[in-house]
Image (cartoon, rainbow, N blue to C red; front, side, top):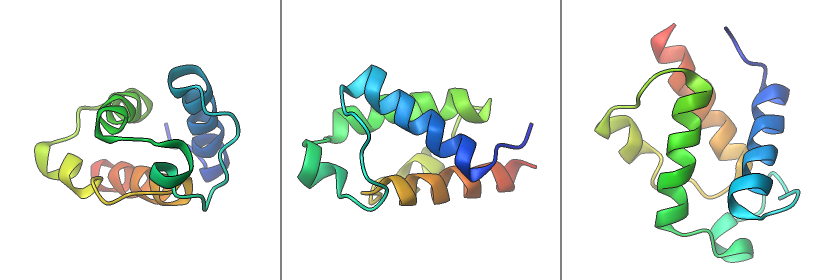
Length: 86
């Protein structure tokens, strides 16, 4: 099942609202600066991304996510991970 960027973004906004109590983050906002999104939150987000993708990310794939700071970058990352498995 291929997700569109809009579907990915909608899922992410829902995840941020439900899991991190962040309502409607802007796609270019630095999540760490604007919302104090930290490494523990990032681990939780990676779990949600794995559910979205339908597979477990490797340690190397998870490391690639460590410098991500915006929703736009998260969308790019998810699209990239999905493309590597299809």
